[in-house]
Image (cartoon, rainbow, N blue to C red; front, side, top):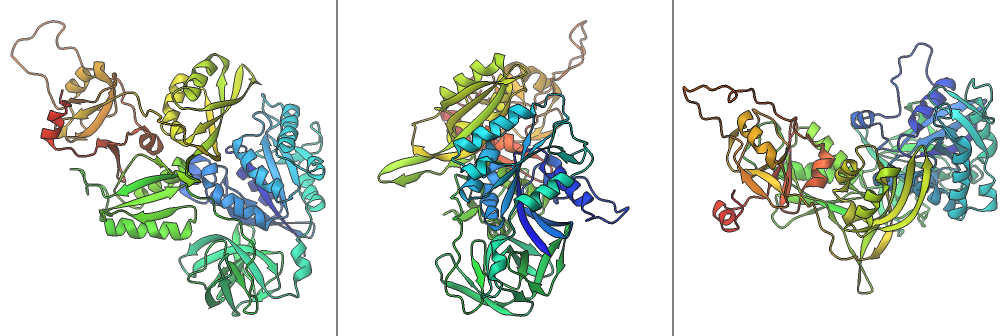
Amino acid sequence: MDLRNIAIIAHVDHGKTTLVDELLKQSGAFRTGQAVAERAMDSNDIERERGITILAKCTSVEHGGTRINIVDTPGHADFGGEVERILSMVDGVVLLVDAAEGPMPQTKFVTAKALALGLRPIVVLNKVDKPDAEPDRALNEVFDLFANLGASDEQLDFPHLYASGRAGWADPELDGPRENLDALFDMIVAHVPAPKQLAAKDEPFCMLATTLSADPFIGRILTGRVESGTLKTGETIKALSRTGDKIEQFRVSKILAFRGLSQAPIETAQAGDIVTLAGMSKATVADTLCALSVETALPAQPIDPPTISVTFGINDSPLAGRDGSKVQSRVIRERLFKEAELNVAIKIADTPSGDAFEVSGRGELQMGVLIENMRREGFELSISRPRVIFREEDGVTLEPIEEATIDVDDEYSGAVIEKITGPRKGELVEMKPAGAGKTRIIAHVPSRGLIGYHGEFLTDTRGTGVLNRVFHGWAPHKGPIEGRRQGVLISMDAGVSVAYALWNLEERGKMFIGAQEQVYGGMIIGEHARDNDLEVNPLKGKKLTNVRASGTDEAVRLTPPVRMSLEQAIAYINDDELVEVTPKSIRLRKRWLDPHERKRQGKVA
């Protein structure tokens, strides 16, 4: 059977997974009447809830005698470690662009790597049936993007289609029949070359491991494209590191190939096909799996270093152990090291105390997803504020810089630019109208400056702004950047919060808790209206007497409290604060201070 390997690239929420749904349906991957969930490729709960792709996944469809292996790539830069390696096992890419928004940061990030590898893209302008779609403008922006990224003349001469993934059609012309996706299938077969590895089927077996996962029945499994030769189930092969050192020798217990949404066991893996192997115990991503006679490892994409680190510790608050079943440092350590084994973009290190662990990764969202998965499994944790990882080169301290692409209403652009370029030490790169009364701002900002900024950004833009960020590079350290400006309200005692006390505290600032909630000394219950921390008493009830007077006994009406998501809480805290995460609650608290020390520092109200 003829073979094609492609990856689909798109920014978050540009309709990538929905389009893959339609490709599967129209290729006959599902039997008639089969119940199929919407966004079938989003396999875990968090992906479905947030509408983002976190894990790279493969699927396979057949069209006119050609098998097309499709790789659904993550749509967020924090999971870009997956994307870079996946592009090395495909021969073409489909670039999906929202016809209203045009190319966005993640599009630029992945497309640059695809163009550098010499892959020729097919551009699909999606959601052209939306009322605010401007497909011609989006197409021109894609061409300009390719030119800026140094695309060759051949890559600039890209074919394009107009499509609606939700409606299930793609046409070469905007006013086409709008019936099905046959035009996309035909363009993939015609435009994407067959794997050049097919010519190397008589050479010794070689495969580069691209993604790593675990199966509860067959154990550790590695997925990648067969670069040369063939492999049969039961054969003995070896794994080589990127430097060519032998890691292990093992017998292949199972070979799986992608057929629709599932994987089916096959007897022989052919050159050019994307397959999954089982049987290894040590081999990991970027290793070469090869025949025993092979001595040289295949060139592999280096794994980008982490840019932020977070301390995961045991939950030692007075409310510890009430919600979760996994609270010991030993259990937390086992879970984190298991995660690092499967997710090569994460690094784990023990701290001197032994009850906390340094977890390094690519961004706040990646950390947030890991913490969310752990709390759903029954873990209780205390999480520190994210810290940026610096590098030393030739005696110069370098820090990570991110490219922030911001779409805001024209009236708020001034406030956003002032915040980005002032206290956060960003540099304005581009500013242009984006249509419909909006402005697009592109700036290079230190990662430190963007930690905790998103909440402030939504306030400044009245919730209408969209902020996207992607790793840009390293630059010399830009000096101190101030953290959160507001202080916090801290409970001075333990007990159950009282509505009357919270009502009296509302003039002090915004509250994070409501009435009848458990609190303890040191817990952060609100944001102070001023820049200093204040200890308050949320337990103080109204003194009752037998005297009643008109106007003094009206019902207490509380302003609804601010409920932070996990990522918002992690970004909000300062260095002397922690986020307490349990399966049922997210609380903020101060790192413990001796009561006499707090009094000496003048922090008691």
